[in-house]
Length: 55
Image 1: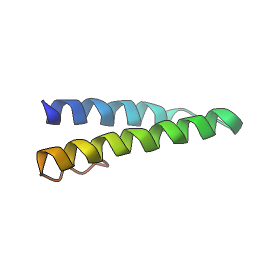
Image 2 (image 1 turned 60 degrees about the vertical axis):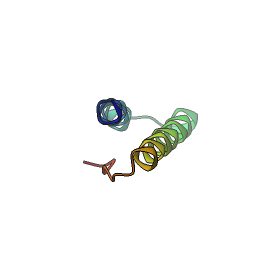
Image 3 (image 1 turned 30 degrees about the horizontal axis):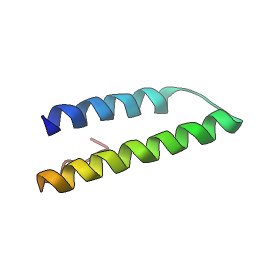
Image 4 (image 1 turned 45 degrees about the horizontal axis):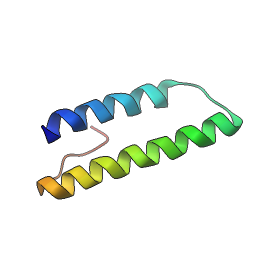
């Protein structure tokens, strides 16, 4: 379950990174990306195995 959730989070991150944004939208996107990375790190810690977020 964790690995499929991590794959989905990576997909969401990739979609957000692909969008061109500026100003406040860009800042909000950066905050979202940071939260996604924190979620993946948390899942990795819980699973005690290292899956690289930037695969």
